[in-house]
Length: 140
Image 1 (cartoon, rainbow, N blue to C red):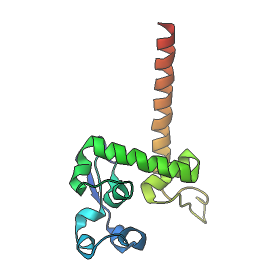
Image 2 (image 1 turned 180 degrees about the vertical axis):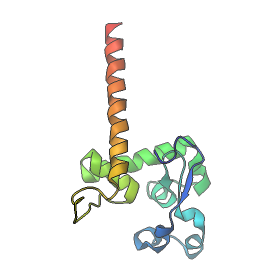
Image 3 (image 1 turned 120 degrees about the horizontal axis):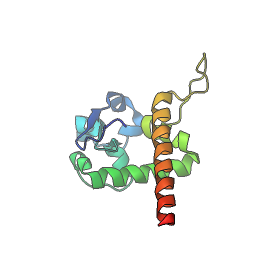
Image 4 (image 1 turned 90 degrees about the vertical axis):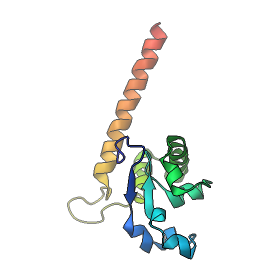
């Protein structure tokens, strides 16, 4: 989605520098380093999130697909266990929680609804492709 398949995708997340939940485990030196406030690679995984799941490499090692995908999937698995449904999981992966709009004409929609809709559309396409391949293999 956001990486558009670019293995070296990086996005600075300036709001994280002010987020206590994110910075509380960082050293003073790490808090001054912009690399700790970026998402990396094809899964756009945050460095601190990967570390919470056991990653011990440097931030730029998350450009490697095997690292980005492995830790991105671990985080998705963690979120799915926590939220128990795919839309909340997708929203949380992107914005940290399944936050919804509380008032106005978009009340009840995720704050990142467009992102959630896009991911769910790709997910349904992927499921349809898998089903078709399974049917083709069953016939052979």
